[in-house]
Length: 631
Image 1 (tube, rainbow, N blue to C red):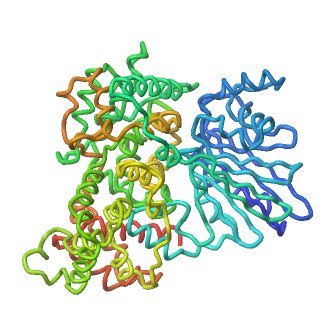
Image 2: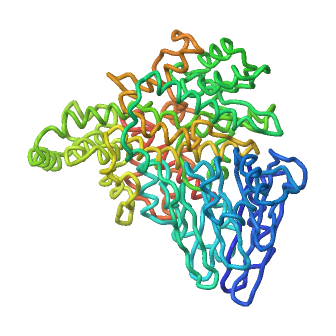
Image 3: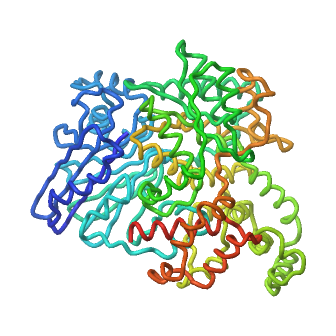
């Protein structure tokens, strides 16, 4: 795992010193080595830089930028099948001086061009500069495990693993995109391809960019899309066949992700997904796996005892740490440094803690993200399906008429109901769902914490909601459950879950790997019949069948808790002074982006214990801290 950054300057003004500054802020992603390459012509200059975290081939032969003939690469990630690709390249008379995957990508690109990415099984973001063709390529892995951002304005193009590199270039304009701010307030993250800044974007998962340096022209190409596999006919397969094939694919994926020249561990929450990863890996190993978990003293959020029970049954070498309010206070000041775009998933804090715990004994840790999106693990799926059955069955004209009537009524004036928790938002969401025409829009409204109307009230500028994957109705996909999982895979999973894990692990120079996101496994899961995922309210059926082969049902059968944090309680107690420090009239007027009166109203309702969503205040609080750090 590493950090990459670079530039193309068509005015030929960017210096090597600026490149050094851009890469210096990514040291946490790769503290073992730093390398830079600089190319210049009459029409453009190119800089490529790399911070290395040594995982495979720990010698300096794996240092980057790496060169081969007319090609230069900087690369972040791991290619798990690199030895098979290397063997194929040797059959074409390529020779190798190292035992690292970087050299394999570079020579695979030389042999097959950008189509080589279709051979790669792994997580990656890389840039290759072809000096003969005068082209720069930037590619991101299929599922979006590894991040890559770019900035394009006039004669300057920048790219990096994290936004913070851009701040080191004197011509980067950090102008906030107010529509992206609106998206952040709704979801707690900014969905791809957008970022919080104008002229700044995320390279989309499963996509590559080709920059023609002679024409100053960017071409974007999507080489993989999970929706394409959801659109295929469902496999004609029964539960037993599906379970056997799925376990074989998982075993292959998990074994791939244990390949390392440094110690490897597993994040174990005690839920089905992480227990599955641990069980399949431990049964293949004669050594005890290192497993790690975070607990909470608040019973409603604590799963540490379940993780401990799983560890004891499987015989892993288990470590646990209980997150306290003091831990939150200690991490909070640096949160905006780690997440250099507004990011409000509160579980980032325990994820940082478990990463610190793991780093004490390993350099690579596996997590189990993706299981809920692939196998129907979220309760929101059944909730949305219930909305569909209960609401969309009524004639559209009737629903629109009722929605219009609701629009005339202020929910805060409805006796009795107004005192229910977060009632005004629930009221607005229900009204939006009445106007919905398909499951995609129901999922979109269910996923939002602020509605469009509320965001417009909160922002001082008019909010024009940008089109995201939430707005794709999946008309070619059979089955509403599949449509929702496809959308979640490209939104919540990529820009919340994977972002959370990447920044948390990299903040302590720990490589995080995602064994459930092997593309072979994803493609198979996407084509499975929906009744093998959810049936009669029972979620993740196939996952449970496999897990119960290795762990007793009495250990596993319990309500899903997730990896959350008691935000509401902590905002009103230990975090209250911090909230008042950042969410006040003076600080809000510094940027004049948010309506001061509305923000203060939300703040005071939460802090006074009224039935207001604490998540709303948390989102605003996180944005305010981010603004103070980066703007």
